[in-house]
Amino acid sequence: MATNKLSFPSFHSWIGYVEEATFGTAIADAQPFTILDMIGNDAPLFSPQQFIDDNIRNRGKNVADINDYFKTESGMWQTYTLPECIGRSGDLANMLYAACETVSEAVGTPFVKTYTLDGTVNPDFSSNAGYFATVLIKEPFSSFSKKLTSSILRTLTINVSLDQGGRLTFSGELVTGKGYTGTSDPSSETNGHSSTSPIHRHSTGTGLTISGTDMVWYSAQFVITNVLDFVGHSVGKAENYAIVSQAVTGNIVVKYDANTDAFANGKGTSLGVVALTLSANTASDYFKFTCNDSWLKEVASDRGGTDTVQKLNLNFDFLNDYANSQYCVFECADGVDRTW
Image 1 (cartoon, helix red, strand yellow):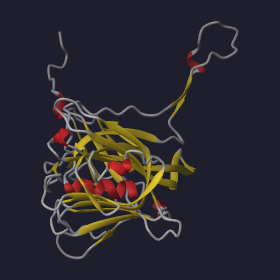
Image 2 (cartoon, helix red, strand yellow; image 1 turned 180 degrees about the vertical axis):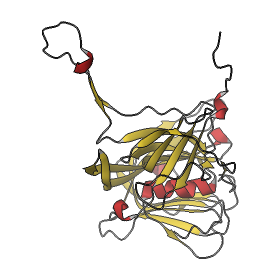
Image 3 (cartoon, one colour; image 1 turned 135 degrees about the horizontal axis):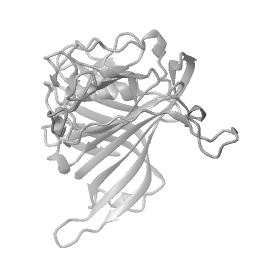
């Protein structure tokens, strides 16, 4: 007979976040968390990274002794795979900051945020520079929720395709060197989804140009990757994080026609400026990616069939120029003055 007769469906578990003010100090349970709009209903799961030594020691016995075992989480990155989420503009603004770790914010509505990867990004997190957040993995039971302190993004993947009705989505890998708690009990009744609009590829002003030429496009993906280092140790936790390098890669599927024929055999060439825009920069669902020096790494042809047109899948490395004066730049707007 069950000793606890309560049970819960998977959608009683959720993921929330709040930007922190002080590096290494988690947001209190009583504070409201913004809930990410996960696409799937799978319950979010967190499995701590641990060092475990379970080797039998030389004790004159051929079975393991309980004293042979050793476990620690000290000096380790804790990681969490962020599932695919709807790209509400407020959430995307935070996630882009957590991945790019640099931002400037325009004055006035819709408060456009610009993230410029100029090759010099390496904030001193220990002095509260950059972006870091408490990430909450909410469980339906009291005092069993997990909070990851001072989390940033090792990777952020942005997708725009018809698979989700044209809505922009994001996913990634969160990491923290500041540890976690597994006994949180968030009590705020104001937790909720971002109220800002999902970013949509069918918005007015949407378009793709490559080398100044308009393209008919079907889907686009951009991946921001940070190589991070764990700086210093204090009671098993990082004293700081360091960004060793940043990279942006991606792929764009375009219609094969006279405008794109030059790309069919263009592997291993520079295509100059790639610019993808969703909506206008006067709206709170604005998103734009620009790279002035794009390297076409691979080209895959989809020659279509009886019910599809021919397409090209262009795989890119997005680079800075030799003079380091032109960069990969992301922009978005959410209509919120975040004083960044």
